[in-house]
Picture 1 (tube, rainbow, N blue to C red):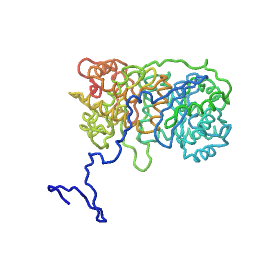
Picture 2: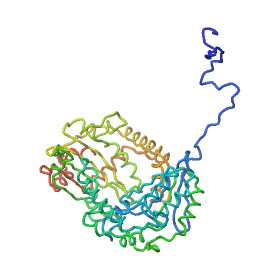
Picture 3: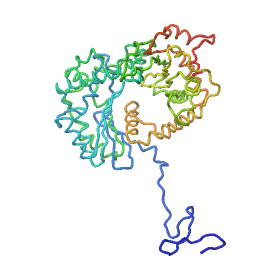
Picture 4: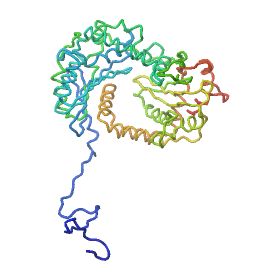
Length: 492
């Protein structure tokens, strides 16, 4: 049936007709829909409660039948000044082993399996994170398990011996990897913060593997694993339900190592030193018949700022503006192909294998680094001055990356936990988005000028035959006659 040449009815396959209503027109006889809105509610979405023993409970509800719950501890390799380095590395490997309630790691995994759960532990320079993802209905079991894993580990001799073997294997594997970035990151921290706080080894030094035993671990845990240094964080669960579980399993629990002694906590503040750390030639390292190309891998770092400072956001934008990646990266603007390190280094010089910017930030300092991999004769010649800062693109890319990452439940969990552990509160995505939008070109210039005044930290490995001395690098960085290595001019 047609009216004025326009179809007003469509035919079912059975032959009957129904009205042809536009998708933009409300259906007749259907109630008006009520759409969900976050207006006025978003600022209340992260709830925080502090228990009587000082433990913080933080949560954010999220639709779904699964949740991510974990305990974050203000403890990491930076706190090992009074101990042999490597304790945090050992605790990561020993996590979710036998406890007071669970006889083995397998028993823990089988318990989680009943609720579709998985567990993981990660340590960094300043935080240790025990996390479980499982069905919401298994929350009570999950918090009980977390409490037991963190506060009641058995640390049996055979478990410690197995951990020694795992650590030794990881140390050997670290030096054999074709990707030098993890090793360079370790080296640049050691050079930038020589012998203190975040400059202490993240991985257990080989000479300390045999020194770490149960007695030493208990002594460390007694100082750092106390409730006031912990956050129980959860995403995808009701806050009151999480608080109830925390009171049940974390409020009056005596740890296996006895009463806490927080008076022994190391209160050292970061001392940025700058400097250089080099490793020998890697050309004989090979995972097969073909040796790794004889490249120079160099990472140059300059002091930025703490994540507690206002300048943290401009530094994050600057890092995004630098961007970069490997020479085989592909994609469009969303992959960073218009960042400075792509436009001025990788796209111009075929001999550059990698040029990437990294930003490491802690509660009392930060480090902005550029990692370059190239032919030994060319490594410090990467990049020229670039006219026109792509500020808006960098800001948009940073906001996009932030929002996309926060679609993931485990990422939200880590964000909630880390922010509450460090500051006692959480900046929500819309607040961070606004802070990024407010960054101006003058902010970028100001933080860059401040950063370029700091003494450089340099880490290098591979073929070092053509690498200039640290004094030459430092002199070039501070030169006023235009002889600045072009890799530094990328910042200007």
